[in-house]
Image (cartoon, rainbow, N blue to C red; front, side, top):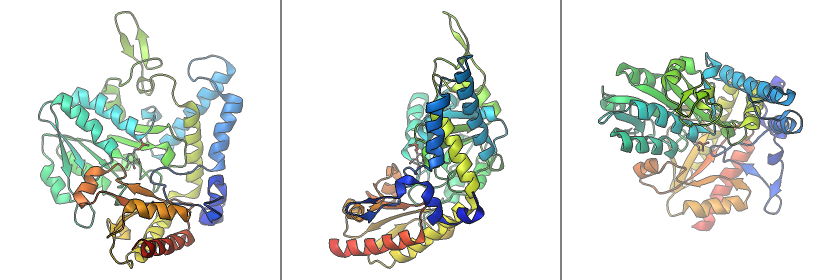
Length: 412
Ligand SMILES: Cc1ncc(COP(=O)(O)O)c(C=O)c1O
């Protein structure tokens, strides 16, 4: 992919067939729901299609040609992920069904075997439900306590509150790198350093980070990092748990079944080595291959460019929206956020706004975005969220702002 193409979203979007359509009586489709899931370039669709047509078989189970082809492609995808996030050992890259499954794996394996009554799990009030509920479930069984770090009024993490809540009781700090509602980019390395100072482990929910700016798990110094394939141009049904190798080796398996064992007898079993130990059953083979193709695509585009392009889109939209009377954009100034802009409008139901915007061709998310505690903290029930990716353009953002103005006038 040429540099020129990489820096031109209007050309990039030609790689995404789904974006090239009109809906609701010839309205161009504007896809601003990338926080929920992104779209796929043809190279990802083709890689998956090619596997199903030519090389598909179960992996690591057959000695026949097809199984060898599929196994090699599956392991090649693991290597691509490892390089992409700078993971030192590819075997510490575990394929899961997604971010949710990856967090459940850590909470159930590491959490159940580590947490004791009175131990504390520290989260932030911004977390997605997938980084709250598994910890609440494990806490209920182990007697551990789940605590939440607050945010400042401008939607950044309250570092004083974090320092105040960290203690030798804190056994893990599990937090998002980027908020899926506020768009806030959290100071990941600083939070990890603070967690380490009290001996706590760290889990980074990088679902909204990995797709949008470079991620280096070694530079962060994290213990666990998780993300989803479908948010980074890959297929649904695939996600990643990366963990510190020694930690993963010391943890018990989460799911039991085929592939994850060394030996099974009628008396019991011994688990296999990494990564098999955490990949019980037939894995998402074609999805892993698709994720590998997505990583090839995004790596050729340059994540530095993606990050700055999205910041520009956010700043442009915020400037326009803030002129609308009664409209609140939640979260920090553009320099502290990624390509996510959530807002509410006094006297206008978020749901009504989103329905009318859909009629004009704009796909946005409305509701609590799986972040109910954060919405409670902000004193709102629901918000509208526009979330961008590399194929979105300034023209789309301007058209969206015009549409919001028109719809608000109509609803008032
Ligand atoms: C920050 C964050 N964490 C976790 C998730 C859950 O991801 P998945 O549904 O792919 O498991 C999401 C999805 O919206 C998210 O935005």
